[in-house]
Length: 131
Length: 93
Image 1: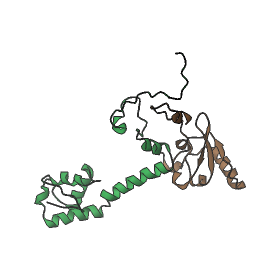
Image 2: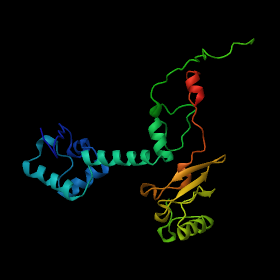
Image 3: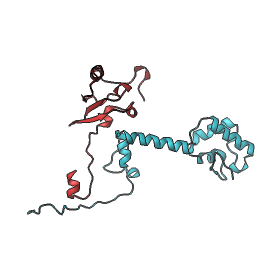
Image 4: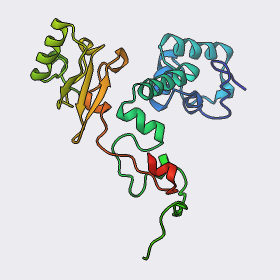
């Protein structure tokens, strides 16, 4: 069991894959980190020595990668800023609709979530006339 | 592709004139504009703009956070309609 930066516990995978379990490190960054730390990407995470682990940690910290809590906070702040100033993107985030101009008549299920059918509820106070 | 930095932010000249005038006279009266495409620069901060949305002018008070956005982003052009109960309360909106 290897721990890198706090709570990350990548299991029996190759280290270049295991590093991606850190929020904010994807394929490209994982490769970069390993190149910086001068570690063979094909080693399994459990086979790393203490020294290699600390090399990786150093590579991540010196590389100024924004990861985990900091990254989540940064994203949250951006959303909050956009919602606070009521700009178009902020409003779309508030309403849970697609932000980048996609159609919403159909599709957009990722943002809208599962389909919910809304029936027509007649106004009980409405005048009843001859239809 | 983004806009070249060399050119600086885009602001319509007629809007710049109006802002300059408002700054000179220190007037806080809202500035009526159709120029939704103008980027908000730091000189806009503290002014109120009435931004056209195709139908009416939407009052927008510019704060520091808005710098870098365009005026049009704050004056929505579509009305948001929802399905649901046609009750008196919902109709009143």
